[in-house]
Length: 137
Image (cartoon, rainbow, N blue to C red):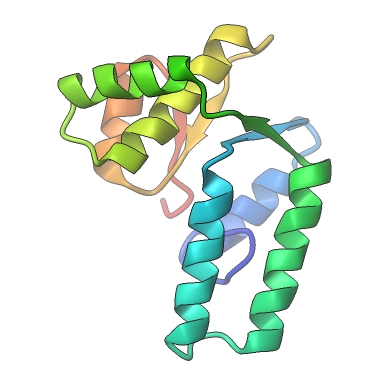
């Protein structure tokens, strides 16, 4: 969200995207629905106009096809999310995000960096051995 809507952490995320050392960004396929939901909620609340919402959603769709690697919602991700829920007090969606990153880590040529601003989720990611970044810090 921070790459598409100005909020705390946006500047740091924009610098991260501009960093030539970062060649891929992975996200859980489910994030597409979460992103659309967040944009539509802002639009309905009057925080974002209809044309701006459409533009943001269109830009995200282009990035889905060109910039992001999507980790699918597989049985392995769901099983790992269930195990993560047993270890940490996470919401289901947060556990799925963490599990998706852990699956990416198991197959990636270089270790991923888990990016989020939720301190409880960051703590779980750290405990699971992931490098992490809170763009609001």
